[in-house]
Image (cartoon, rainbow, N blue to C red):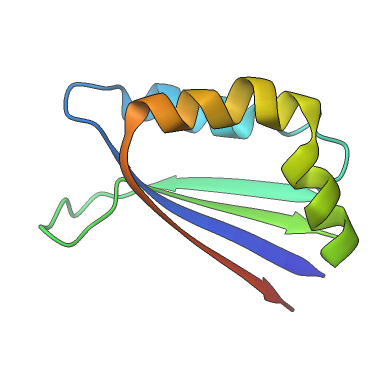
Length: 94
């Protein structure tokens, strides 16, 4: 199993709830996504990111398919890229 994790800082004035909804929309629209969870930070400290997304995938090949998925590439990625000020990612095996 693979975990694909993103921490996102949303641009000032942008909707964190809308970002969460767009990320969660991959469930059912991206076939390789076995599970997805999205959490919104509540501390709002200087070092905090606004959103953490965790996607579970079957294996490394599924991660490659996920990265090229039409819905992910045409809906989710453009939205995130245009509404974020920063993002970090970690991919690891469990």
